[in-house]
Length: 204
Ligand SMILES: [Zn+2]
Image (tube, rainbow, N blue to C red; front, side, top):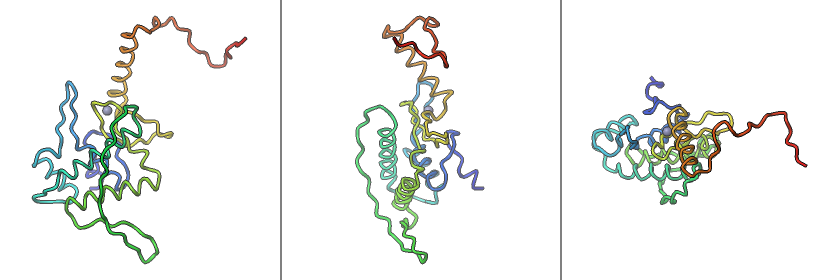
């Protein structure tokens, strides 16, 4: 069933169409948090084989490192786009899918036959199409630098920053308020006057 195949490793909303493939590739990455150690699916032969077969590539599949490199480049690009982290730019990745002119006049990229290079081509074509139709900006990686789970941001104004506000969002708010307190620049809690809507500031 389509819905089952598209379920996410981290229980996040999944991107539509082929963009889901990009999201699924991003989410093969491991997570190293203090109390949560999620392995990298492309690091071990058995988990890599399972992931690849899910995307139609069976048997012995050399070249997983090309996929890892692609994944890490996409991740870095999304971090550079959305996070204020000053991430180093990633090395470009190249692929050479064929172009095809269809009978109706539409020109599209066509990935090659099934193997890892074809999967790389599918991922690049999906990104290309998403950048043209405007959906690319909704594929994000969680702003928690220890998490980086890829999620589909369905918010109306594309303002989503966390794969899960309750875990990563709250943890970050706590970290920031602790950092502010440690810096000594805090006001006593409750002492600051709240801004009241509808009461214009008197500026004389
Ligand atoms: Zn997260």
